[in-house]
Length: 147
Length: 147
DNA sequence: TTTTATAACTTGACTAGTCAAATGATGATG
DNA sequence: CATCATCATTTGACTAGTCAAGTTATAAAA
Image 1 (cartoon, rainbow over the protein chains, first blue to last red):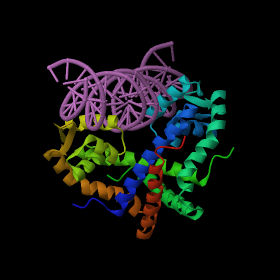
Image 2: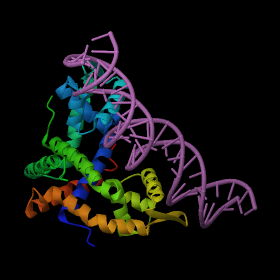
Image 3: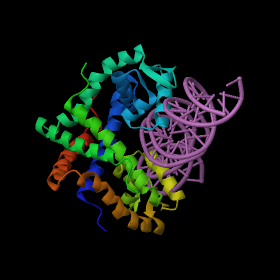
Image 4: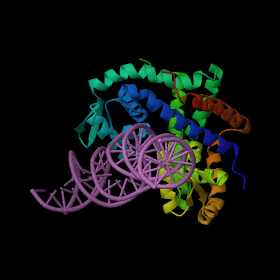
């Protein structure tokens, strides 16, 4: 019983790497009192605000329930405001979040980039990006698998 | 305030893709009553058994605490046996797990591979693999970041 | 033999997420 | 106006994980 195909080896690498880099990123963001997940959500809000929970959930690929719980935490910490606006709730950043992001964003982007800049040249990064984009886009089409 | 460097774009892609494919994989493995995380752990045990919790934790990149909880669940389901063996606990698969894996393994490997086989040719997969291997190995060196 | 070390494992309190059933908000119809 | 429909959000019960403090198993020193 073989336990590897090229695809499964790639899969494993991707999982282990994202796991690992996520933890490193959590460590890194501690100085801003943020987790990687929180940073991600706040960034999406920053770009698209004001937006509804459904829209946000889609952007960060979590379920309705997941985004609801996350936003409760962020609201409790004073990073966001939600207000009932017709049937939906509209989310926007507070001053506090805006100013933390102003500081954290460039640092976090540099941190993320360092994973790649340190070992791949520009050409290789572009290759990696296009390959992953194709793979990712393809996976999105699988969402409702046949049968 | 720009919000993208090539590195950060790659990072985002990787996170979203692993997220998404993890969920799809959970769906897929439901027929075997397994989650992706459980499958992963069982596979590592299968390859390296008998082994200790510490060793296993390292293989799947989770903490001691994390592996402890996971193993409690797997033991409750009857997939593994742990026995105190000197200061450490030695883990091995039960018959039940062996026979489920016999069935699930080829299917799961094919499933994982399909994410890549469907959109990348052999050459491209090899490229993706080598690039990710470099990136991953590099990230492992960061574990204790300077300062 | 009681104390002292130490390595391996567990546990409490928490974040982050899933699914599916329940609740809220609003509008439309009998 | 009451009920019905519908979309958005919340919630209960769960998996999966983190960190740091607490246990347990074993060996060696006092």
